[in-house]
Amino acid sequence: MRNRAKHEILTGLQYLIIGMIAEIAVALWVRREGGDALRPVIAWFLIASALSLLRLGVIVAVGALRRDQWQTISRRNWI
Image (cartoon, rainbow, N blue to C red; front, side):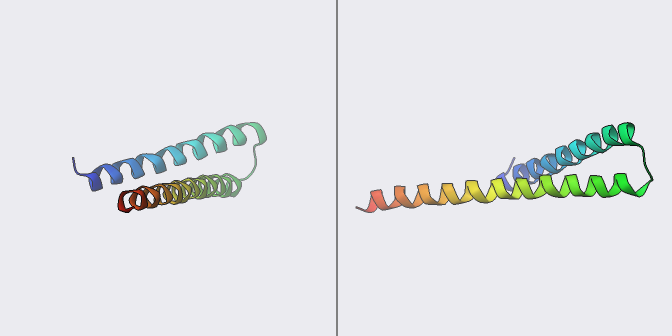
């Protein structure tokens, strides 16, 4: 399997997990609190958005750390 296909599959699985976590959290909240039909949709959107932003933050942080490490390795090889 090519790297791009693996990347797409892993990305899809990550978003599936985000959606499942948000759905479970909203289902538990609705079971406890009750309420109208729009509140669970808004809650699901907020939870999924927060988890997506957290995922992107982790990706950016890992990319920044990885970039620094490669630069130092490259500099060592050229010295």
